[in-house]
Length: 550
Image (tube, rainbow, N blue to C red; front, side, top):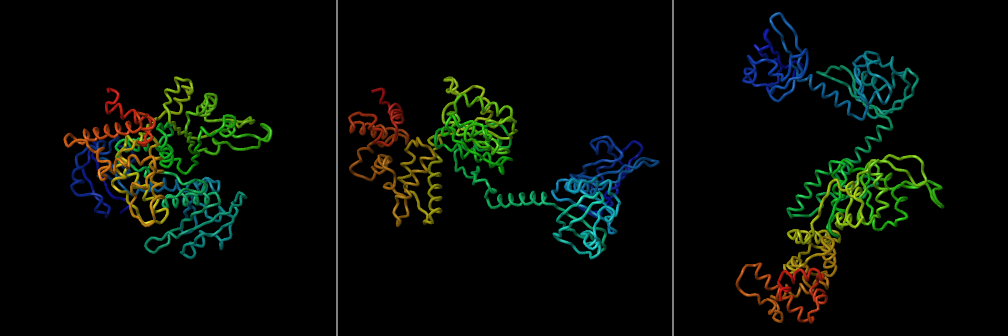
């Protein structure tokens, strides 16, 4: 690529009358593109009024142009390198290391902003000055002069030198010769002090953590959206939405029954956000005594009360990160008012302290109850509710994502086999059928516990989880599932040979409930216990099957 790529000649009316390719790179332009520019108004090509210099996009490529006035019109000189130089300057500005460039005689040419901040100078003051006029340094120990003398790179050399203003600096430098066509034209030096090295170390460590799928020091292993096992469309929609809101700092309220995975979603949001390398602090609000709430969240100063010491609270510990308030519905209205003030003002005082401490914390809350109903009961303050629920995410119960039950069960079993180095187990079809029939009031957490129980119950020499590995409360479902193969229970399967699958299942369900009620003298509580479900679930199924109409 040449320094000059195109010459565009304009007439007095600023129309293009000739286009000449100067650069040697054929990929920049095709002949037909150059031809298509002829007779076009230059303002139309530029997309703006013609200036003495600027940037133009042609054929999806950017060029910096310089406009020169001639007797019969104007001439534009276009260079793609000019735009790249602007990009390079911006790139240098984002580098953590200081960068200095000298010509082959040791005269200062360029420095980036990191170098200026490191040494405390303005590069315009040094422009054109010789290195020995800037630094009080021995020529034999200068990184730049060593490179210019030997034409070889210098790596990781510690330089301790004095500026002409008397300031002493200690830096770690690496430098390289600038050679074009085997001719030395200068040297570039990358310099770092202790603060820069620490930033580079943290950046490298975070990259290693990302590649290794681990977390930085001080951060426990966090769940991510990839850990949420699902096929249900409802969960796909929730994850898509959660990823979008992860990129904001809006307060999020996650609502769902116990065991639906509220903390899993909260951690995934944190892991996906820009705060992922900052602290994630989860608090089970129902387990925090009311008299300790303030000291836990805001911290204490020594002498605030008998035996108190200076101690940071959760807001200080989570600064820059996320606080997850689990079971937020258990917080008293008095504490809600104090938390509300912090959420609004982004500052707080330690207990016994007099100064305000600024905090940058994102709040993610979770509740297993309907907070709108609790507001009616005055257990949740309205202003507190609207502050923590800018974004609301409702997690479905496991029974409402039944296509995920088998997927989750197999995944949990696979994890257990890997954890305990056991040959992979499979789950028998009748067990999967039983899982599909069960209501799972404990949701995903209950399913995980059932799989763990079955894994431990299975004999060492078996390769399949069978019905006899299930917990006792699932045994009624076991008998129903097996009744197709057991003569003594075949009467439960007398559901008729006609009708759709749903109609046959409904008749079977009615027959099972009727027989179990008869065996337990019509006692609904005992029948529900035998069937391994809650009383509420049994009553729902009885109503669904028409028992209430009898």
